[in-house]
Length: 281
Image (cartoon, rainbow, N blue to C red):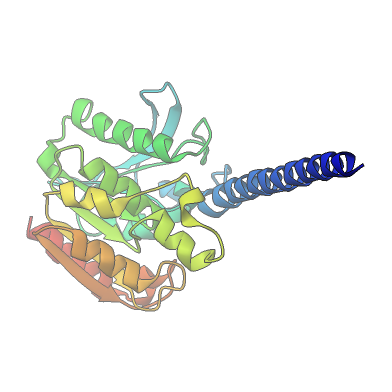
């Protein structure tokens, strides 16, 4: 009888252990699925509809379609400036599309530079689905277009990235020759951002890295970092962390205003710093 009870106890123990293990594995799987869903919906906010274009603000432009190395067709606008020495490759942020950047395009154009702004895959009229590696390929396609089809010298290309676009610009700047890099409202890594917005989740579960903190060390061109002390989305401390990781030559400019409007709220201070940076290249 005692042996039978012991056998039953062992059998029950195995069942309990199996159930506990099953619950734990299920919980982990659900957590990973939740994090992936949360991650993709927190990072990428594309819109497809292009309502306006540079002609809406009286700027001539060329509507460009490019093909990336992985055969995705992306769209961009080339806005020329007569006899411009420099061309800005504009990497926009994670939301909307190129049509939402007309205010900033106008400001840059006023500085006497050509502008080439691209829509990442999945944004605007660009094909494909947003992804970290895909964004890097899109920016590289834009750079190759300027060098190989516009015959613009690499040393006359300035990479500009706003917010998430700063991470895209930094990745490209770490791999190719450029004249300068401007990063506005940019963070150090996605995992650092995740710690701010989702402190209850293990940051290692986030598959997107956008690790600018490591890549900025391989950018040797002049660098201008711009960040608002009032930024409610990307902490000022993360911008400083990124800046401190960068090598010389570099500059840090503190502006005012919210994340998406600081370039307008800061007005002439924003423009004058960029103008001085470009003239100093």
